[in-house]
Length: 154
Length: 358
Image (cartoon, rainbow over all chains, first blue to last red; front, side, top):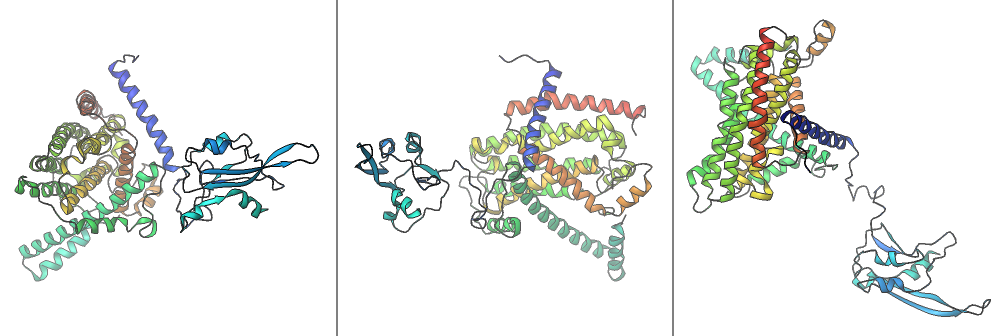
Protein backbone atom coordinates (compact mmCIF):
# COMPACT_ATOMS: atom_id res chain seq x y z
CA UNK A 1 0.00 0.00 0.00
CA UNK A 2 1.10 3.52 -0.78
CA UNK A 3 1.44 5.47 2.41
CA UNK A 4 -0.10 8.92 2.52
CA UNK A 5 2.38 11.76 2.91
CA UNK A 6 1.80 15.38 3.85
CA UNK A 7 2.65 18.14 1.34
CA UNK A 8 6.04 18.91 2.86
CA UNK A 9 6.77 15.26 3.63
CA UNK A 10 6.06 14.35 0.02
CA UNK A 11 8.25 17.19 -1.21
CA UNK A 12 11.17 16.14 0.97
CA UNK A 13 10.72 12.49 -0.01
CA UNK A 14 10.66 13.50 -3.67
CA UNK A 15 13.86 15.53 -3.37
CA UNK A 16 15.48 12.64 -1.52
CA UNK A 17 14.64 10.10 -4.21
CA UNK A 18 15.77 12.46 -6.98
CA UNK A 19 19.11 12.91 -5.21
CA UNK A 20 19.47 9.13 -4.87
CA UNK A 21 19.04 8.79 -8.62
CA UNK A 22 21.51 11.57 -9.29
CA UNK A 23 24.05 9.98 -6.95
CA UNK A 24 23.92 6.75 -8.92
CA UNK A 25 24.26 8.35 -12.36
CA UNK A 26 26.87 10.74 -11.02
CA UNK A 27 28.97 7.78 -9.92
CA UNK A 28 28.40 6.07 -13.26
CA UNK A 29 29.73 9.17 -15.08
CA UNK A 30 33.20 8.56 -13.66
CA UNK A 31 33.38 4.76 -13.85
CA UNK A 32 35.44 2.99 -16.49
CA UNK A 33 33.56 2.83 -19.78
CA UNK A 34 32.61 -0.58 -21.15
CA UNK A 35 32.88 0.25 -24.87
CA UNK A 36 35.45 -1.89 -26.72
CA UNK A 37 37.06 -0.32 -29.78
CA UNK A 38 37.20 -3.67 -31.51
CA UNK A 39 39.48 -3.81 -34.54
CA UNK A 40 42.12 -1.60 -32.91
CA UNK A 41 42.22 -3.27 -29.51
CA UNK A 42 42.08 -6.84 -30.77
CA UNK A 43 44.98 -7.89 -28.53
CA UNK A 44 43.62 -6.37 -25.34
CA UNK A 45 39.95 -7.07 -26.00
CA UNK A 46 37.98 -7.86 -22.86
CA UNK A 47 35.05 -10.20 -23.45
CA UNK A 48 32.71 -11.26 -20.70
CA UNK A 49 33.60 -14.83 -19.66
CA UNK A 50 29.96 -15.87 -20.06
CA UNK A 51 29.95 -14.92 -23.75
CA UNK A 52 29.21 -17.94 -26.00
CA UNK A 53 31.45 -17.82 -29.05
CA UNK A 54 31.77 -21.48 -30.09
CA UNK A 55 31.82 -24.93 -28.54
CA UNK A 56 35.13 -26.54 -27.54
CA UNK A 57 36.31 -29.55 -25.57
CA UNK A 58 38.58 -28.38 -22.75
CA UNK A 59 41.48 -30.58 -21.70
CA UNK A 60 43.17 -31.09 -18.37
CA UNK A 61 46.92 -30.86 -17.74
CA UNK A 62 47.68 -34.23 -19.43
CA UNK A 63 45.66 -33.32 -22.50
CA UNK A 64 42.77 -35.65 -21.66
CA UNK A 65 39.13 -34.77 -22.17
CA UNK A 66 36.39 -35.99 -19.87
CA UNK A 67 33.99 -37.05 -22.64
CA UNK A 68 32.51 -40.54 -22.18
CA UNK A 69 30.54 -40.48 -25.45
CA UNK A 70 27.23 -40.78 -23.62
CA UNK A 71 25.41 -38.67 -26.23
CA UNK A 72 23.47 -36.50 -23.78
CA UNK A 73 24.60 -33.33 -25.54
CA UNK A 74 23.47 -34.72 -28.88
CA UNK A 75 20.04 -35.44 -27.42
CA UNK A 76 19.81 -32.05 -25.70
CA UNK A 77 20.55 -30.09 -28.85
CA UNK A 78 17.33 -28.65 -30.36
CA UNK A 79 18.96 -28.02 -33.75
CA UNK A 80 20.77 -31.32 -34.31
CA UNK A 81 24.03 -29.47 -34.21
CA UNK A 82 26.02 -32.26 -32.55
CA UNK A 83 26.68 -35.73 -33.96
CA UNK A 84 28.66 -38.23 -31.90
CA UNK A 85 30.23 -41.39 -33.27
CA UNK A 86 31.41 -43.88 -30.69
CA UNK A 87 32.73 -47.45 -30.57
CA UNK A 88 33.00 -50.10 -27.89
CA UNK A 89 36.51 -50.99 -26.80
CA UNK A 90 37.37 -53.97 -24.59
CA UNK A 91 39.40 -53.04 -21.54
CA UNK A 92 42.20 -55.64 -21.15
CA UNK A 93 42.56 -55.35 -17.36
CA UNK A 94 38.93 -55.53 -16.31
CA UNK A 95 37.63 -57.47 -19.26
CA UNK A 96 34.70 -55.11 -19.67
CA UNK A 97 33.54 -53.22 -22.76
CA UNK A 98 33.58 -49.42 -22.64
CA UNK A 99 32.27 -46.76 -25.03
CA UNK A 100 34.99 -44.53 -26.50
CA UNK A 101 34.53 -41.33 -28.49
CA UNK A 102 35.57 -41.55 -32.12
CA UNK A 103 34.20 -38.41 -33.69
CA UNK A 104 32.52 -35.35 -32.22
CA UNK A 105 30.95 -33.35 -35.05
CA UNK A 106 29.75 -29.86 -34.22
CA UNK A 107 27.99 -27.70 -36.85
CA UNK A 108 28.65 -24.07 -35.91
CA UNK A 109 26.37 -22.93 -38.73
CA UNK A 110 23.34 -24.58 -37.10
CA UNK A 111 24.21 -23.75 -33.51
CA UNK A 112 22.02 -21.19 -31.76
CA UNK A 113 24.29 -20.89 -28.70
CA UNK A 114 21.59 -21.90 -26.22
CA UNK A 115 24.08 -23.72 -23.99
CA UNK A 116 21.70 -26.68 -23.45
CA UNK A 117 24.46 -29.12 -24.47
CA UNK A 118 26.86 -27.71 -21.88
CA UNK A 119 24.14 -27.89 -19.23
CA UNK A 120 23.32 -31.48 -20.20
CA UNK A 121 26.93 -32.71 -19.98
CA UNK A 122 27.42 -34.53 -16.69
CA UNK A 123 31.22 -34.48 -16.88
CA UNK A 124 32.07 -30.93 -17.97
CA UNK A 125 33.59 -32.21 -21.20
CA UNK A 126 32.35 -29.37 -23.40
CA UNK A 127 32.17 -25.62 -22.92
CA UNK A 128 31.77 -22.38 -24.86
CA UNK A 129 34.79 -20.18 -25.47
CA UNK A 130 34.69 -16.42 -25.97
CA UNK A 131 36.40 -16.81 -29.35
CA UNK A 132 34.01 -14.99 -31.71
CA UNK A 133 35.77 -14.43 -35.03
CA UNK A 134 34.00 -17.35 -36.69
CA UNK A 135 33.57 -16.00 -40.22
CA UNK A 136 34.63 -18.37 -43.01
CA UNK A 137 34.23 -18.37 -46.78
CA UNK A 138 32.56 -21.78 -47.12
CA UNK A 139 29.66 -23.13 -45.12
CA UNK A 140 31.09 -26.63 -45.02
CA UNK A 141 34.06 -25.39 -42.97
CA UNK A 142 31.63 -24.54 -40.20
CA UNK A 143 31.15 -28.26 -39.49
CA UNK A 144 33.97 -28.95 -37.06
CA UNK A 145 35.34 -32.10 -35.61
CA UNK A 146 36.06 -31.22 -32.02
CA UNK A 147 37.66 -34.58 -31.33
CA UNK A 148 40.09 -34.11 -34.20
CA UNK A 149 40.90 -30.64 -32.96
CA UNK A 150 41.72 -32.11 -29.58
CA UNK A 151 44.10 -34.63 -31.12
CA UNK A 152 45.76 -31.92 -33.20
CA UNK A 153 46.30 -29.85 -30.10
CA UNK A 154 48.00 -32.74 -28.33
CA UNK B 1 40.76 42.18 -16.07
CA UNK B 2 40.83 42.93 -19.80
CA UNK B 3 38.04 45.26 -20.88
CA UNK B 4 36.80 44.24 -24.32
CA UNK B 5 35.15 47.64 -24.87
CA UNK B 6 38.65 49.03 -25.64
CA UNK B 7 38.62 46.94 -28.83
CA UNK B 8 35.09 47.96 -29.82
CA UNK B 9 35.88 51.63 -29.07
CA UNK B 10 38.99 51.41 -31.25
CA UNK B 11 37.03 49.86 -34.15
CA UNK B 12 34.36 52.53 -33.81
CA UNK B 13 36.83 55.43 -33.85
CA UNK B 14 38.67 53.85 -36.78
CA UNK B 15 35.47 53.56 -38.84
CA UNK B 16 34.20 57.04 -37.96
CA UNK B 17 37.57 58.54 -38.96
CA UNK B 18 36.83 57.99 -42.66
CA UNK B 19 33.07 57.23 -42.75
CA UNK B 20 29.99 59.18 -41.70
CA UNK B 21 28.61 58.15 -38.30
CA UNK B 22 25.49 56.36 -39.66
CA UNK B 23 27.42 54.22 -42.17
CA UNK B 24 29.95 53.26 -39.51
CA UNK B 25 27.18 52.18 -37.12
CA UNK B 26 25.51 50.23 -39.92
CA UNK B 27 28.74 48.37 -40.73
CA UNK B 28 29.31 47.65 -37.03
CA UNK B 29 25.77 46.26 -36.71
CA UNK B 30 26.35 43.97 -39.68
CA UNK B 31 29.69 42.77 -38.31
CA UNK B 32 28.18 42.07 -34.89
CA UNK B 33 25.27 40.21 -36.49
CA UNK B 34 27.70 37.98 -38.38
CA UNK B 35 29.72 37.42 -35.18
CA UNK B 36 26.57 36.44 -33.25
CA UNK B 37 25.47 33.99 -35.92
CA UNK B 38 28.95 32.48 -36.03
CA UNK B 39 29.11 32.16 -32.24
CA UNK B 40 25.61 30.70 -32.32
CA UNK B 41 26.61 28.01 -34.82
CA UNK B 42 29.85 27.20 -33.00
CA UNK B 43 28.08 26.88 -29.65
CA UNK B 44 25.41 24.68 -31.24
CA UNK B 45 28.12 22.36 -32.56
CA UNK B 46 29.94 22.27 -29.22
CA UNK B 47 26.65 21.61 -27.41
CA UNK B 48 25.65 18.74 -29.68
CA UNK B 49 29.08 17.16 -29.30
CA UNK B 50 28.97 17.64 -25.53
CA UNK B 51 25.46 16.18 -25.33
CA UNK B 52 26.56 13.02 -27.11
CA UNK B 53 29.70 12.61 -25.04
CA UNK B 54 28.06 13.37 -21.67
CA UNK B 55 25.09 11.13 -22.46
CA UNK B 56 27.52 8.35 -23.39
CA UNK B 57 29.49 8.81 -20.18
CA UNK B 58 26.34 8.59 -18.05
CA UNK B 59 25.44 5.36 -19.85
CA UNK B 60 28.95 3.92 -19.45
CA UNK B 61 29.72 4.26 -23.16
CA UNK B 62 32.34 6.27 -25.05
CA UNK B 63 30.10 8.03 -27.58
CA UNK B 64 31.33 8.97 -31.06
CA UNK B 65 34.95 7.93 -31.45
CA UNK B 66 35.52 7.20 -35.14
CA UNK B 67 35.26 10.47 -37.09
CA UNK B 68 38.33 12.48 -36.19
CA UNK B 69 40.20 12.22 -32.89
CA UNK B 70 37.70 11.38 -30.13
CA UNK B 71 34.89 11.82 -32.66
CA UNK B 72 35.32 15.59 -32.86
CA UNK B 73 34.51 15.77 -36.60
CA UNK B 74 31.30 13.74 -36.13
CA UNK B 75 29.07 16.77 -35.52
CA UNK B 76 30.44 18.58 -38.59
CA UNK B 77 29.63 15.51 -40.66
CA UNK B 78 26.09 15.50 -39.22
CA UNK B 79 25.61 19.19 -39.95
CA UNK B 80 26.82 18.68 -43.52
CA UNK B 81 24.41 15.77 -43.93
CA UNK B 82 21.56 17.94 -42.62
CA UNK B 83 22.43 20.74 -45.04
CA UNK B 84 22.29 18.57 -48.16
CA UNK B 85 18.99 16.87 -47.26
CA UNK B 86 15.80 17.73 -49.08
CA UNK B 87 13.20 19.98 -47.42
CA UNK B 88 9.95 18.14 -48.04
CA UNK B 89 6.76 20.17 -48.54
CA UNK B 90 3.81 18.47 -46.83
CA UNK B 91 0.53 18.28 -48.72
CA UNK B 92 -2.41 20.14 -47.10
CA UNK B 93 -0.12 21.91 -44.70
CA UNK B 94 -0.29 25.65 -44.22
CA UNK B 95 2.76 26.40 -46.39
CA UNK B 96 3.46 29.92 -45.15
CA UNK B 97 3.23 29.15 -41.43
CA UNK B 98 4.95 25.80 -41.93
CA UNK B 99 7.99 27.51 -43.42
CA UNK B 100 7.86 30.44 -41.01
CA UNK B 101 7.81 28.41 -37.76
CA UNK B 102 11.49 27.34 -37.56
CA UNK B 103 12.60 30.90 -38.22
CA UNK B 104 10.50 32.26 -35.35
CA UNK B 105 12.04 29.67 -33.03
CA UNK B 106 15.57 30.51 -34.15
CA UNK B 107 14.86 34.27 -34.03
CA UNK B 108 13.73 34.07 -30.40
CA UNK B 109 16.77 31.99 -29.58
CA UNK B 110 19.21 34.41 -31.24
CA UNK B 111 17.62 37.45 -29.58
CA UNK B 112 18.01 35.83 -26.17
CA UNK B 113 21.53 34.69 -27.07
CA UNK B 114 22.70 38.22 -27.88
CA UNK B 115 21.77 39.39 -24.36
CA UNK B 116 24.41 37.24 -22.68
CA UNK B 117 27.47 39.12 -21.37
CA UNK B 118 30.38 36.94 -22.51
CA UNK B 119 33.19 38.98 -21.03
CA UNK B 120 33.88 42.40 -19.61
CA UNK B 121 32.67 44.93 -22.21
CA UNK B 122 31.53 42.12 -24.50
CA UNK B 123 27.76 42.54 -24.32
CA UNK B 124 25.76 43.01 -27.52
CA UNK B 125 22.38 43.96 -26.09
CA UNK B 126 22.86 45.69 -22.77
CA UNK B 127 20.26 48.11 -21.45
CA UNK B 128 18.44 48.83 -18.23
CA UNK B 129 15.74 46.13 -18.59
CA UNK B 130 18.07 43.40 -19.87
CA UNK B 131 16.56 40.46 -17.96
CA UNK B 132 13.06 41.59 -18.82
CA UNK B 133 13.96 41.70 -22.51
CA UNK B 134 15.69 38.32 -22.29
CA UNK B 135 12.69 36.51 -20.79
CA UNK B 136 10.35 38.26 -23.24
CA UNK B 137 12.49 37.40 -26.26
CA UNK B 138 13.03 33.80 -25.28
CA UNK B 139 9.30 33.22 -24.81
CA UNK B 140 8.59 34.15 -28.45
CA UNK B 141 9.92 30.66 -29.21
CA UNK B 142 6.71 29.04 -27.99
CA UNK B 143 4.82 30.83 -30.78
CA UNK B 144 7.08 29.17 -33.32
CA UNK B 145 6.54 25.77 -31.74
CA UNK B 146 2.76 26.19 -31.68
CA UNK B 147 2.82 27.32 -35.33
CA UNK B 148 4.95 24.32 -36.30
CA UNK B 149 2.47 21.94 -34.69
CA UNK B 150 -0.57 23.72 -36.08
CA UNK B 151 0.61 24.07 -39.67
CA UNK B 152 2.03 20.55 -40.17
CA UNK B 153 -1.40 18.93 -40.64
CA UNK B 154 -0.39 16.08 -38.35
CA UNK B 155 -2.08 15.12 -35.10
CA UNK B 156 1.16 14.13 -33.40
CA UNK B 157 2.62 17.52 -34.19
CA UNK B 158 -0.44 19.29 -32.87
CA UNK B 159 -0.53 17.30 -29.62
CA UNK B 160 3.19 17.85 -29.17
CA UNK B 161 2.85 21.58 -29.78
CA UNK B 162 -0.08 21.88 -27.36
CA UNK B 163 1.81 20.03 -24.65
CA UNK B 164 4.82 22.21 -25.34
CA UNK B 165 2.72 25.36 -25.12
CA UNK B 166 1.10 24.33 -21.84
CA UNK B 167 4.47 23.42 -20.40
CA UNK B 168 6.48 26.41 -21.57
CA UNK B 169 3.88 28.99 -20.57
CA UNK B 170 3.56 27.41 -17.11
CA UNK B 171 7.26 27.17 -16.42
CA UNK B 172 7.88 30.70 -17.64
CA UNK B 173 6.17 31.74 -14.42
CA UNK B 174 8.49 30.05 -11.94
CA UNK B 175 11.49 31.02 -14.06
CA UNK B 176 10.41 34.65 -13.82
CA UNK B 177 9.86 34.30 -10.07
CA UNK B 178 13.34 32.92 -9.49
CA UNK B 179 14.88 35.69 -11.61
CA UNK B 180 12.79 38.22 -9.68
CA UNK B 181 14.22 36.88 -6.42
CA UNK B 182 17.70 37.87 -7.57
CA UNK B 183 16.49 41.21 -8.96
CA UNK B 184 15.19 42.01 -5.47
CA UNK B 185 18.72 41.42 -4.21
CA UNK B 186 20.44 43.44 -6.98
CA UNK B 187 17.85 46.21 -7.55
CA UNK B 188 18.90 46.32 -11.22
CA UNK B 189 17.84 44.47 -14.37
CA UNK B 190 20.84 45.45 -16.48
CA UNK B 191 22.89 42.33 -17.11
CA UNK B 192 26.31 44.04 -17.12
CA UNK B 193 25.39 45.81 -13.87
CA UNK B 194 24.28 42.49 -12.32
CA UNK B 195 27.68 41.00 -13.12
CA UNK B 196 29.50 44.05 -11.70
CA UNK B 197 27.59 43.74 -8.41
CA UNK B 198 28.99 40.23 -7.96
CA UNK B 199 32.59 41.42 -7.75
CA UNK B 200 32.66 40.82 -3.97
CA UNK B 201 30.92 37.43 -4.12
CA UNK B 202 28.55 35.63 -6.43
CA UNK B 203 24.85 36.01 -5.71
CA UNK B 204 24.44 32.34 -4.88
CA UNK B 205 26.78 33.02 -1.91
CA UNK B 206 25.59 36.54 -1.17
CA UNK B 207 21.91 35.64 -1.15
CA UNK B 208 22.58 32.29 0.61
CA UNK B 209 19.35 30.30 1.31
CA UNK B 210 16.79 32.06 -0.96
CA UNK B 211 19.36 32.46 -3.75
CA UNK B 212 20.12 28.73 -3.65
CA UNK B 213 16.42 27.81 -3.71
CA UNK B 214 15.92 30.23 -6.61
CA UNK B 215 18.88 28.62 -8.41
CA UNK B 216 17.37 25.14 -8.07
CA UNK B 217 13.93 26.35 -9.18
CA UNK B 218 15.54 28.16 -12.11
CA UNK B 219 17.37 25.01 -13.22
CA UNK B 220 14.19 22.90 -13.07
CA UNK B 221 12.08 25.52 -14.85
CA UNK B 222 14.81 26.18 -17.40
CA UNK B 223 15.06 22.50 -18.18
CA UNK B 224 11.31 22.42 -18.76
CA UNK B 225 11.50 25.63 -20.80
CA UNK B 226 13.80 24.04 -23.41
CA UNK B 227 11.68 20.83 -23.58
CA UNK B 228 14.48 18.64 -22.35
CA UNK B 229 15.31 16.16 -19.73
CA UNK B 230 12.47 14.72 -17.72
CA UNK B 231 10.19 17.34 -19.32
CA UNK B 232 10.65 16.23 -22.94
CA UNK B 233 7.08 15.06 -23.46
CA UNK B 234 6.35 17.58 -26.26
CA UNK B 235 8.68 15.45 -28.34
CA UNK B 236 8.21 12.14 -26.54
CA UNK B 237 9.33 9.80 -29.29
CA UNK B 238 7.53 6.77 -27.90
CA UNK B 239 4.16 8.55 -27.97
CA UNK B 240 4.37 11.30 -30.59
CA UNK B 241 7.20 10.22 -32.95
CA UNK B 242 8.96 13.59 -32.67
CA UNK B 243 6.28 16.01 -31.46
CA UNK B 244 6.01 19.38 -33.14
CA UNK B 245 8.87 18.80 -35.59
CA UNK B 246 7.68 15.41 -36.86
CA UNK B 247 6.98 16.71 -40.37
CA UNK B 248 10.09 18.81 -40.73
CA UNK B 249 13.08 17.60 -42.69
CA UNK B 250 16.45 18.89 -43.79
CA UNK B 251 17.61 22.21 -42.45
CA UNK B 252 14.15 23.19 -41.18
CA UNK B 253 14.43 20.32 -38.71
CA UNK B 254 18.04 21.35 -38.21
CA UNK B 255 16.96 24.82 -37.10
CA UNK B 256 14.65 23.36 -34.44
CA UNK B 257 17.38 21.04 -33.30
CA UNK B 258 20.03 23.75 -33.13
CA UNK B 259 17.64 26.17 -31.40
CA UNK B 260 16.88 23.54 -28.76
CA UNK B 261 20.56 23.05 -27.95
CA UNK B 262 21.44 26.74 -27.96
CA UNK B 263 18.38 27.46 -25.80
CA UNK B 264 19.85 25.02 -23.32
CA UNK B 265 23.10 26.97 -23.46
CA UNK B 266 21.20 30.25 -23.01
CA UNK B 267 19.43 28.88 -19.93
CA UNK B 268 22.78 27.80 -18.56
CA UNK B 269 24.40 31.11 -19.52
CA UNK B 270 21.69 33.12 -17.77
CA UNK B 271 21.99 30.90 -14.69
CA UNK B 272 25.75 31.45 -14.77
CA UNK B 273 25.32 35.22 -15.16
CA UNK B 274 22.63 35.73 -12.53
CA UNK B 275 23.64 33.23 -9.87
CA UNK B 276 27.28 32.38 -10.49
CA UNK B 277 28.69 35.76 -11.41
CA UNK B 278 28.94 35.54 -15.21
CA UNK B 279 32.44 36.53 -16.32
CA UNK B 280 33.29 37.74 -12.80
CA UNK B 281 36.15 35.68 -11.30
CA UNK B 282 35.78 34.02 -7.93
CA UNK B 283 36.54 36.71 -5.37
CA UNK B 284 36.76 36.09 -1.64
CA UNK B 285 36.72 39.13 0.61
CA UNK B 286 40.00 39.68 2.41
CA UNK B 287 42.13 37.35 0.27
CA UNK B 288 43.65 40.00 -2.04
CA UNK B 289 46.45 37.76 -3.37
CA UNK B 290 43.96 35.06 -4.33
CA UNK B 291 41.69 37.65 -5.98
CA UNK B 292 44.47 39.09 -8.17
CA UNK B 293 45.50 35.58 -9.28
CA UNK B 294 41.84 34.88 -10.23
CA UNK B 295 41.73 38.18 -12.16
CA UNK B 296 44.45 36.92 -14.52
CA UNK B 297 42.05 34.28 -15.89
CA UNK B 298 40.16 36.01 -18.74
CA UNK B 299 36.47 36.75 -18.32
CA UNK B 300 35.17 34.63 -21.17
CA UNK B 301 36.94 31.58 -19.70
CA UNK B 302 35.02 32.13 -16.47
CA UNK B 303 31.75 32.67 -18.33
CA UNK B 304 32.03 29.62 -20.57
CA UNK B 305 33.38 27.49 -17.73
CA UNK B 306 30.38 28.31 -15.54
CA UNK B 307 27.88 28.05 -18.39
CA UNK B 308 29.12 24.65 -19.48
CA UNK B 309 29.17 23.47 -15.88
CA UNK B 310 25.47 24.38 -15.61
CA UNK B 311 24.86 22.67 -18.97
CA UNK B 312 26.52 19.58 -17.55
CA UNK B 313 24.22 19.68 -14.51
CA UNK B 314 21.18 19.97 -16.81
CA UNK B 315 22.42 17.01 -18.84
CA UNK B 316 22.88 15.11 -15.62
CA UNK B 317 19.16 15.74 -14.90
CA UNK B 318 18.20 14.67 -18.38
CA UNK B 319 20.04 11.36 -18.33
CA UNK B 320 18.96 10.47 -14.79
CA UNK B 321 15.23 11.08 -14.49
CA UNK B 322 12.42 9.36 -16.38
CA UNK B 323 9.92 11.41 -18.37
CA UNK B 324 6.96 12.94 -16.51
CA UNK B 325 3.32 12.74 -17.57
CA UNK B 326 1.52 15.95 -18.55
CA UNK B 327 -0.50 16.03 -15.31
CA UNK B 328 2.66 15.46 -13.26
CA UNK B 329 4.38 18.31 -15.08
CA UNK B 330 1.54 20.71 -14.34
CA UNK B 331 1.29 19.48 -10.72
CA UNK B 332 5.00 20.07 -10.22
CA UNK B 333 4.71 23.58 -11.60
CA UNK B 334 1.47 24.85 -10.07
CA UNK B 335 1.46 23.00 -6.77
CA UNK B 336 5.17 23.02 -5.97
CA UNK B 337 7.42 25.40 -7.91
CA UNK B 338 5.12 28.45 -8.00
CA UNK B 339 4.17 28.43 -4.26
CA UNK B 340 7.77 27.73 -3.25
CA UNK B 341 8.97 30.44 -5.63
CA UNK B 342 6.53 32.98 -4.16
CA UNK B 343 7.51 32.11 -0.59
CA UNK B 344 11.15 32.29 -1.62
CA UNK B 345 10.58 35.77 -3.07
CA UNK B 346 9.03 36.83 0.23
CA UNK B 347 11.99 35.37 2.13
CA UNK B 348 14.40 37.26 -0.12
CA UNK B 349 12.50 40.51 0.44
CA UNK B 350 12.70 39.99 4.21
CA UNK B 351 16.41 39.28 3.95
CA UNK B 352 17.03 42.37 1.82
CA UNK B 353 14.89 44.64 4.02
CA UNK B 354 16.61 43.54 7.23
CA UNK B 355 20.00 43.47 5.48
CA UNK B 356 20.72 39.83 6.33
CA UNK B 357 22.65 39.07 3.12
CA UNK B 358 26.44 39.22 2.81
